[in-house]
Length: 103
Image (cartoon, rainbow, N blue to C red; front, side, top):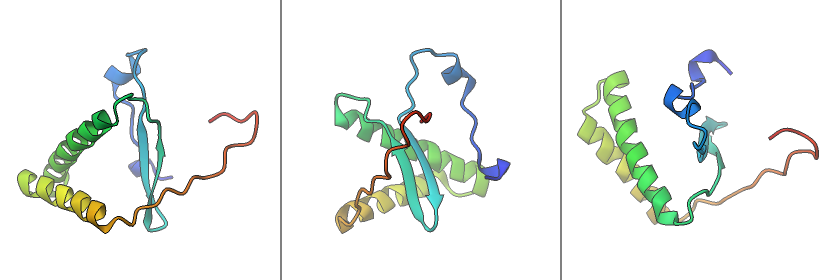
């Protein structure tokens, strides 16, 4: 994978022994691929996390691509709403790693 696509763990997270990684996402072969850990006891907390992520992503679109931040945020939410209404998202789990391998 190109260095351009690798993301760095923030120093504040690396320094926090109680930090939990919840989600990794990639776009691969024209589809989203992710690794998830349902660490919250309340699934609604994950929904709140997604809204915060959408706000941060909208800011990233402003900084990196010059988009209007509010418009980008609304387009992200529209994309989420479209996916919810389509109701065609399916979970496909990859097989577990070989016994003894590091995950």
